[in-house]
Length: 253
Image 1 (cartoon, helix red, strand yellow):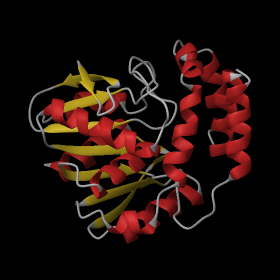
Image 2: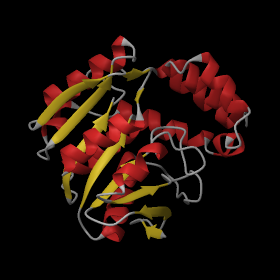
Image 3: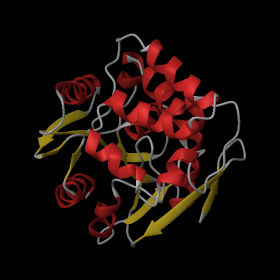
């Protein structure tokens, strides 16, 4: 399936299951070949029409310059339109920022669920991080850019090593320029934007994550007018597929 964003960018979409529409938004460095939430799709599809998509510039989706965070809101709106015009939305990591931005803009979202939005509003952007990432992308060292990004955000070293031998590694290298999109997407979140999100929102965090991610989840939930925070047993920046599916099913049902 394919949605068409407002600027004409084609967005590749997959649907699994039948029922109310549910759209899942990937984190940074993810696409159809390597989707961290993939294991939750089957149990969710028992109750929902689950829509996953490649964010712009990744996998089978197109891209149109110049990038702006609002373009990803347009992309999500196009996916929701394809899904029937209204949907529940789950966003993981930087995908949570997309979901929140869309909800604040008045997109037809019934409820939102988020797993560890990776930002704390009011903190200055890490300009050195963005500059180094941009330098690696510009000089064509896409593999180095992926490694640098992952190490900077705290991905365990053993996971980074495993990615290099994963069949999706060429796809990860190809999407490396879009890691700058994720950096801009999260760095431009504001308290005013969060205050504009009237949609009921469940913010999840993992007991296995670092203090920054867990604290960020609590902070975001506290700033949302209809926000609720829950912490689940899990690993760094993730929870078990079955636990995630159970939480989302209960929340969206």
